[in-house]
Image (tube, rainbow, N blue to C red; front, side, top):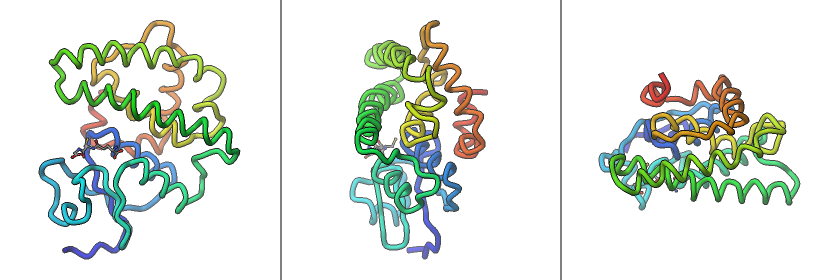
Length: 205
Ligand SMILES: N[C@@H](CCC(=O)N[C@@H](CS)C(=O)NCC(=O)O)C(=O)O
């Protein structure tokens, strides 16, 4: 096995779960070796390290982490500045519920679309995902970030899905201007630009 001296992230170049980890790394300015990988053709050393053979996977010396949520929680604790979660227990719990729902619902539906774009499930997922995101517009009206004046792990989780909407064929309702404004702000961040791979960049030409 190759000796890795810095942290390594095995990342899918178009995978939204990998994208949120790349975004957290960029927001915190963490230097890391990003290795592009593809499920089904994973490097030999990764197959040994991660029993689920999934992306993303983070290797930090002897520590091997998989599941993007475990990875971003580790990064936020290991590199506390800037903090990407609120301090107060009630607000933390609200942010965790938001993460849970976006992971389950939005990522779930995006996965249904990407898995079989021409299928029946994809057509239904496009409609339901568009409605779900549009219905959340109110949340983005009052503050520049998700219920906050600061960028958080919730924003890092939402942004990869919003970036992919045209690519996924998902449309938002005309009433969702607050989301358009939110997207504009997030996508203009230098860290967001830095988080994008080449194929992701071309999802919004
Ligand atoms: N909950 C996981 C989901 C990641 C995921 O679904 N990754 C896909 C790549 S898009 C994968 O590795 N699939 C192969 C597998 O799980 O066997 C996470 O957050 O990391």
